[in-house]
Image 1 (cartoon, rainbow over the protein chains, first blue to last red):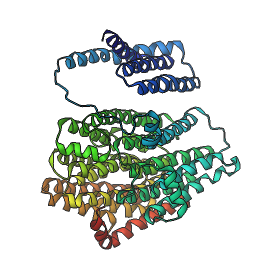
Image 2 (cartoon, rainbow over the protein chains, first blue to last red):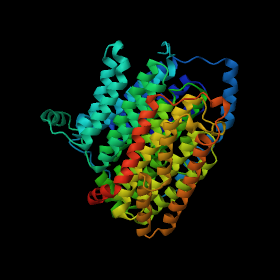
Image 3 (cartoon, rainbow over the protein chains, first blue to last red):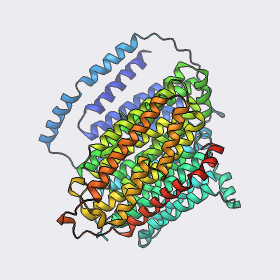
Image 4 (cartoon, rainbow over the protein chains, first blue to last red):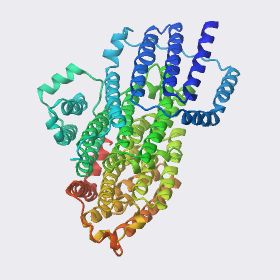
Length: 164
Length: 466
C-alpha cells in the first residue's frame, strides 16, 4: 500500500511537471515517467498485459515519436524561454493547489462502490482480444498513426514544389 | 459489404502513396472515383462473390443500416465537392496530395462511425476523423489557422477525456461497451450508467460545437483552407458529433426523461445562439460557421421530439444541412478566390459578375432558412411536428422563430454580397472556375430535387425509420 501511494504521488507530480514545464523535451520525459508509474499501478492491480502495453507503447514508443518530432523543431532563445517560463508559472500556479483540493475533497467521499468487475471477453488471451475481438480498434489506431505521419509532413516540411 | 465500404478508401490511401511520383497529380481523381464507388455501394449493395470473400477474411464487426445509408453518401457528396474545390484553388501539388490523403483518412473515420456497434470503436473512429480534421485546418499557413486548429485540438482532447471516462464507467456498470449493453444498463436505471451516458453526451456536445462549447468551430471553419472548410462544415463535425448522437440518443432516451430534455435544451440554446451570432458577422465564412452551429442545434433538438418522427426529422435535416452548407462554403470559396476577401462589407453587386455563385447561393440560403418548396423546408417542418407531437410546444415555437432569424441573416448575406451597385474595385471580377461552380450547381440541384420530390420520399423514410 505504501509503495502504491508513493507511486501515485510520483505519477501526479510527474503529470504536473509535464503540464508546467516550458521545454518540450522535459515534458516528454515527464510524460514517460507518468506512464511508467501508471504501468506500475496497473501491474500491482493484476493487469499485467495492460501494464506491459502502457510501458512499451506510452512510455516507450510514444516518447520516441515525441523526441523525433521535437528534433525537427528549432530551439528558442534563452531570454524568450525565461520569459515564457515565468508567464506559464503565473498562469498555472493554481493547478497544483486545485489538484490537492480535489484530492482532499475526494478523501471525504465515502460512497461504497458495489461494482463487480466483468470477466474479460473470450479466453482472456491478449492476442485474442487485440487481433480478434478488438481488430476494428487496431485498424482505427493504424489510421490515427497515418494521420500523425501526414501531420508531421504538414507541420514540419517546407513546401518546395514549384506551385504547379 | 460493410468491410468493403471501410477498406475501399483505405486501399485508395495506400495506392496514391505507392504509385510512381509522376502519377500523384491524379490522386484527386482516384479519391473521387473511390468516393463515388463507396456511395454507390452503400445505396445499391452489389453482391459479387469476391466481396463476400473479403468480408469473411477481414470479419470486422460492422453493421450496415439505414443510418449508414444516410451518412456515407452524404459524406461522399461533401468529399467530392471539397476535392473539386481543392483542385481549383490549392496552389501546390504537394498540398493537394496531402489534402487528398487526409480527406481519405477522415472519410474512413466517418464510414467507421456510421457502421460501428460499440462505444469504444465509435470513440476510436471519432478520433480518426478529428485528428485528420485538425491537420487539414493547418494546411493553410498562418497564425490564425494554427489558432483555429489549436482550439479544435484542445476541445477535442477534453471531449476524448470525457468519453474515455464514460467508457470506463460503462465497462464497470454495464459489463461491456456495446450499444446493447449500454442501452440495457441505462434501461435498468443505475445512477452510474446515467453518469456514464452524461459524460459521453458531453464529449459529443463538445465535438459537435453545442452551446456553450461552440467557440472553437468558427475559428476552425473560417481559417481553414477553402476546400477544407467545405469538407469540415459539410460533414466532419456533423459526423463526429451530431451523427453519433443520432446513433445513440433514440436507443438511450427514447424521446422521454431527463436525457431527452437535455437534448431539447442544449439543441434549442445552440440553434438560437448560433443564429444570433450569425447576424452579427461581417466575415462570410464566420457567418456560415455560426449558421452551421445553429442548424446542428436543430438536429439535436429534433432528437428530443416524438420518437416515431424524431430520428427521421433529424436524419433529413442532417442530409439537407450537409448539402446546403457544403454548397454555401463552396460559394464562399469562390468569392474568396475571385475577390481575395471574405469581408461582406467590402462586397456588393457581385451577383451580376458571378451569376452561378449568386444563384446557387440563393437556393442554399433559402433552403437552410426553411422556405418551401426547398429541401430545408421539409426537414424543418418535420422537426416542428416531431416537437409539437411530443408536447414540446415551446421548443416547436423556438424552432419556428429561430428560422425567421436564419432567414434574416441569409437575406442580409445575399443583399450585402450579391445585390446593389458593384464597387469599382470589383468591376473586373468574373465567375469562378468550374471547380467551384460545378459542385455548387450539383448541390443546388440536389436541394431543389429533394424539395420537390419530398412528398414521394417521406413514406420511404417513415416506413422503415430513417
